[in-house]
Amino acid sequence: MAPVVGEEYLDGHVVVRDGRIAAVGSGHAGRFSGEQVRMIDATGCLVTPGLVNTHHHLYQWATRGMAVDKNLFDWLVELYPVWAHIDAPLVEATTAAGLAWLALSGCTMSMDHHYVYPHDAGDLFTAQVEAAQRIGLRFHPTRGSMDLGQSRGGLPPDRIVEETDAALAATEDAIDRWHDPAPDSKLRVAVAPCSPFSVTSRLMTEAAELARRKGVRLHTHLAETVEEEEFCRKTHDCTPTEYAERLGWLGDDVWLAHGVHLNSDAIGRLGATGTGVAHCPSSNGRLGAGIAPVRQLLDAGAPVGLGVDGPASQEAGRLGDELRQALLAARLRGGPASLTAREALSMATIGGARCLGRDKETGSIEKGKLADLAVWRLDGIGQVGIDDPVVALVYGAQPPLELLLVGGETVVRHGELQTGDADSLARGVRRAHRQLMKRVRR
Ligand SMILES: [Zn+2]
Image (cartoon, rainbow, N blue to C red; front, side, top):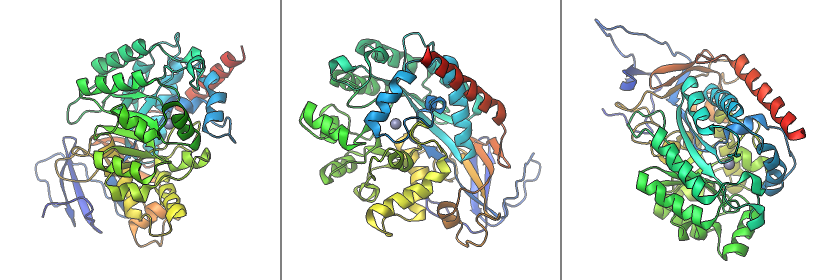
């Protein structure tokens, strides 16, 4: 019997060979005579696909806990001048620590959206790639950009935006240097101008053309707040979704962060075009942005994944927690039938893989797919007595992680990171934060 997405085994096995899932089924895996075998007894545990993070800004790990009571635009205006002082060592330290933190919350694949490139900051993209290779997660860094400074009607100060052509050239260079299209790739690059209020229409249009010429995916922030909607109506005389469609930014090679303020026409267009949405319920709550219409997006057929978003607007940053946040947010908006525990888990796994264009390769436990697996311990005091393991995972506190495998390689074991020292990663972020604040005060 071929395992299918959604099938569950109360008592089952997964066989991993050469980084891929060789078998999955009920009961014991049987004998493996003549092979070198490592057996893992997961009694008391739930095995799920590794979680997929569809929206993040890892550099913000150095600027958490600031502008804590502000809406998006006021928060950005306070933080842009701080971010103007980031450099490559800060990006290296925050990327490593942020990915380690994601791994410890069950994440096997994450994107990053980096859009702040100060002129003298060094090679930030390479710093990210090297940090990710060290921690061992599947990584989809996006080359972000901003070219609409205050003097031209945008929100960011002019000194942290790039020239349009320079941003496009740097984006193309990042793709040429780093993008790996192989089916088992641990490094894929996408193109990601930041948002309607920090990017010109020309950069949006030409970025989409570049991505399609190169065969890579497209990402941006869209429909996050009422202020953004007002900006689009005033500047372009349309909603953010109409603006995106006008610029060639709807399609099954695009996923959008947030999608909070979407009318029924917009939801229909996202569903019809297969445009994905990175749902970030904790960040939306922290900034008071609103609650995304997740039920309606799922019903319209749009791919929906979960994202932690940048740690400056979501200090907790654990992807495992977003399962519960997504469930609660959907129900606060539309009542208890709005989202089930299994739908939340599906968004965090195969839904996220669809957003990142990896659903044929990962996001579910199926024979032949990459062995990206999370093993959650459910027999401890936090989850004990909840009979349904998926309910225990989603409704309860995030359980301890027994094991995290990325392509069969161990990244977390018994709740401890195996690919780096968590204390030294924390020290790296503390150093980066202090040096940043010193530069800001200067
Ligand atoms: Zn964001």
